[in-house]
Image (cartoon, helix red, strand yellow):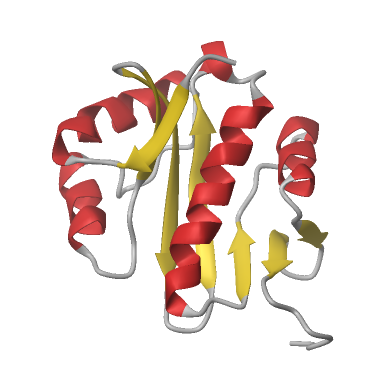
Length: 146
């Protein structure tokens, strides 16, 4: 793996994030636009993380805290980097770390139903919850059930 840096996105990254999602054939949403992404960056309980290889944007993650649980959306790798699971793991780890500032005890993620995606989230310590059809990871779990 190259020297990949994971950091908080800036306004200058927004077009590149949309291009990344398009290149990765990620399902398009009504909120896939610069204005909506700028709103995420402006929100105190959400952010966008980017994985950069130099100036090249190779991955993204969007962690958000809703006041109850954390969710990690849009862990997307550029197709040329898709086989580099370590980049995905670095994005997930950074997203979980970012969410921990809110006292997050559970992080969930809507995840594509592909073997590669499931393997990545399992490697990151998440478990598939068939009831919610999400992958979940309890932080600081001390025998608590929810």
